[in-house]
Image (cartoon, rainbow, N blue to C red):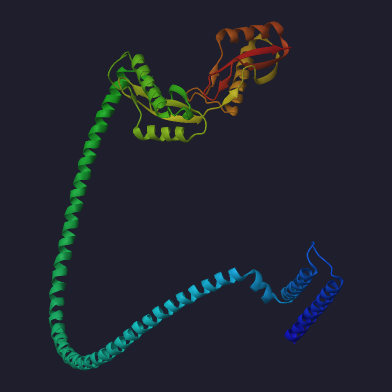
Length: 411
């Protein structure tokens, strides 16, 4: 229906334009009008041609507006040709692929036929294998019967072997018992020999000790602090500084025993003790106070056996800190010194509570100059009555000490 309507519209428009052109041409002919200075004859021809052009133009415009196919044919013909060329190439490529697939199909069909042939061959071989299996089963039954007879013979032989083995085991057990007895006697002999040697060494040491006790004096007492140092692990010189501390302590002992510069070791610290102390120093986040402490009493020319004590280092008192204070009432001159000594004991206890290391021999953390003690006693005698005593730190003091103090009096 759309095509009929379109033809009708085109015919109507073309007829209308032709009619108008005819009228215009007739009118131009009758009135002998002239366009562009031309003769009326040519003017009439121009009107007729223009009318035809208008009819064609109107037809194309209407077709273009109404039909997308006409628009495509008029304006996209080259694109359609290119698309047709591309499609033709794709069709050719698909045809080639189809031909290749057909060839592949033929090859696979040939392979399938070959497989069918192989299956038939394998089936034939399977039938042969089944026959061979039947023969093998028959041989197995015969072999099993022979094996049963062999096992009966084996049982008889095994029983005889067990009897012989029991006899051998009894003899072996007797041998093992005798070997253990001999080994035990040898160990006891070795132990006795070692005990004899140890007793001989102990006797020699006791004899030397008695001689030392008779003729010599105790140079260093047990738990006596031989040297003290602060080692900081952050510098990465922990091992070197610890070794230098031991070397310096050894030289100090040689000087004290009257053998300075001697090529000998007056100090004895075990390697395990050294390694344990070094690991503790290296693992510590802060510096460590290391003290070399005598392990036992040392007399004569004995080597000083020592161990290492380690404590984290920190500041206990700053210069000017009041360590302790106490109010005393000086009633007479006879108890003034005892009052001062009791106050010093209080100072010592306060410092120990704060974390200072004490001297293992006398339990003190420091000392006071004799002149300081004399002046304090003298001032107390002069003032008399109720007086407050204050112990003030003379300098910054760490865990290792020693603690130096000054006593202030306030009345």
